[in-house]
Structure formats: structure tokens, C-alpha cells
Image (cartoon, rainbow, N blue to C red):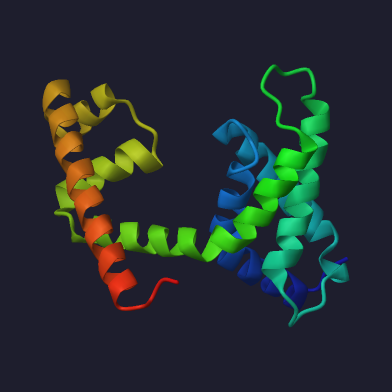
Length: 179
């Protein structure tokens, strides 16, 4: 049984590493819904075994190891699917992800910064589409535009975000912030 300090520490550490864990699992699974299921199972396992984790050590590495084993367990259950990565492939991707995690986090932070620069209506459209998974039609209804207008706005927003992220990453690279 966990005490309230364990609960608080677990929630804090998991919150800090959750996005990276999701990206890690996504690289080893063919579908986002599979990654969601695997990550959910991994969180349950992490909570059950949180007493085995030594505070002050690398929670991210420990959590990735738990998630890795959950990916393998999930793959065994889904063995009959047509698209199935080999164990060797999954292990290679897991190793590569360790190296790429900080770069992915930097890209995510840059994207979030660029989204924050959008005007509020465009932020809402992006949120509805990419966080909420709303259809173009439902977004059009929510913002009082036609579907065609929403398609055009999203196209412009994506180009704008691509330019913003590329420029910022180029600047960060030139400033030596990304290695």
C-alpha cells in the first residue's frame, strides 16, 4: 500500500515524464491507439511497483524500461496482426529513442511556443483539431465558418507553424542549444 507521499511523488514524476514516455511507446507501435493502451498498462504497472523505485534515481529510465516490457507483452498478445515489428526492431528503436528524447522534447516545446503565438481563434481551431480530434465539419460549426474555410485556415496555420518551428530550431542550432 502506498502512502500519500508515495502517491504525490509518483504523480509528480509521471507527469514530468509522461509526454516522453508516450513518444517512446509511439515509436514502437504501429497505431496511436495501441500506444495509448500500452502506456495505460505501463502506468498501472509503474504504480504497482513504485515501491521498488528508489527516489533520486532516474525515473525516466525506470519508466521507459517498464513501458518497454509492456510493449513486448502487448506485441505477444497481438502476434496475429499483419503488421508486427520484430523484437530486434523494437529493441533498436528503444535504444535510439533514448538518444532522441531530448530532441523530441525540444521540438515539442518549440511547437508549443509557436502555437502560443497564434491568435486565439487559430489556437482554438488547432486545439479542436489536434487535441480534441474533431472533424473539419464540427470545427466549422463550432467557429461559425464553412468546412472549406476551416480547411484553408488549417492549411495556413500548418504552414505558419512549420515556418515558426523551423526558424526557431535553426536559431537554437546556431546558438548551440541543440547538439
